[in-house]
Image (cartoon, rainbow, N blue to C red):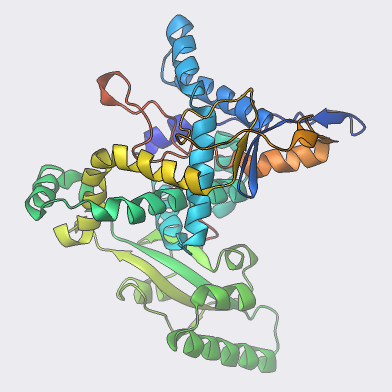
Length: 401
């Protein structure tokens, strides 16, 4: 998994806005399509073409084969952008929250990368992808949100017989072997340089926070509002995934003997009081069938979803406010849907500053190459030729040795 991850990450290009453009230069950007409250621009589609070509090159395509593959995928570029926007918008309408999935996925990436220091890990990701930590995390969140919508609205209606799930598990047991590790969120209350009275106040605050968390207040909210560890506080206290030997012994002795959802008492360290929530806990060895049953259900349901996903996306198009410039083609257009550009006064491409275009490109670039189950053709040999989406990193680590 990790080698594959590195392969597709290096194919993702930085923003097309050059850093050395004079601040006085006006940049013209054309809106290609309006999708409810979002837009897709010509520059974004051009950037996507570059990403497609880079990814296909990384998979060994050259010459005429490369040109043909780029042409085929480019024909669906606008369709894919509209698909993604519609699914992300639908996910927000349904109040779907994927923060837990994001946390778990990126924690696994952290373990596989073997880079425990958060700053070094973030820098490694930036070097590989050309994106910041925040951009990568947001990109993965959107990908998982789109996938969750497909799973909830379509996949959940596809029934896979229990015998087939069990058969897949038995034939792929090696894929469900786990390491002994714990996934943690944290609240850190600093005691460094404080007087005895201030330390006593810090201890009282820490105990109060534990009590509030155990009574049901969201741990992430408490971390954002109270933790003195700024990096993890920004991400709801999430600290990462850890194997034995990576944490201070007083912390390790507690978190490795408790189960998912447990909130520790304040643990004293030389410079702080640390409160941890166990987001997940994997014991070393073979995961049971029941533990991975939902994962297997998703794997087996995906091939059956292809026609249903396109039907669902067509329905979303029918319900959406959608306008497309005449020079652009949505290959997934809904039959009978009028998507002509009606705002005649705005047919001329808007002119804006470099800074405004750069800001917009940064925001929307995160939506490129979100793989939506059942929407892409398979290449020769059955492999999906659509570039996968980039991962995001986990936040800061807890206090270590």
